[in-house]
Amino acid sequence: WPPLLSFLARNGNELLVETNQADAHLTALFTLSEAIGFVLFQRGGFLLHGSAVALNNRGVVFIGEPGAGKSTTAAAFTQRGHRLIADDMVCI
Image (cartoon, rainbow, N blue to C red; front, side, top):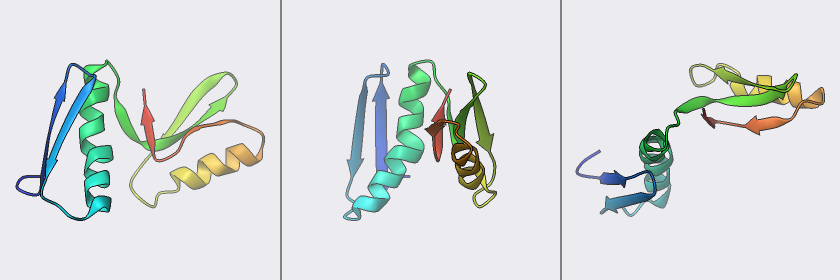
């Protein structure tokens, strides 16, 4: 996102974020949506935009476009006694 923000992910355990951005929310969004994904990838994971619940001792992930109902679906499962694993971002 130059010139607003840039990052360097090293060895899955270090993340350097450089910005001249005064908006902390924009910096947080960039860091969570882009940079953390690279760190997780370096650690052997993969970041998905979705929600996950535990169903029959397995993790089930709901992915889709924004507004598709991922969180709503996960909430419906939790109301039926299933455990929420993650909402909005899921690392597999």
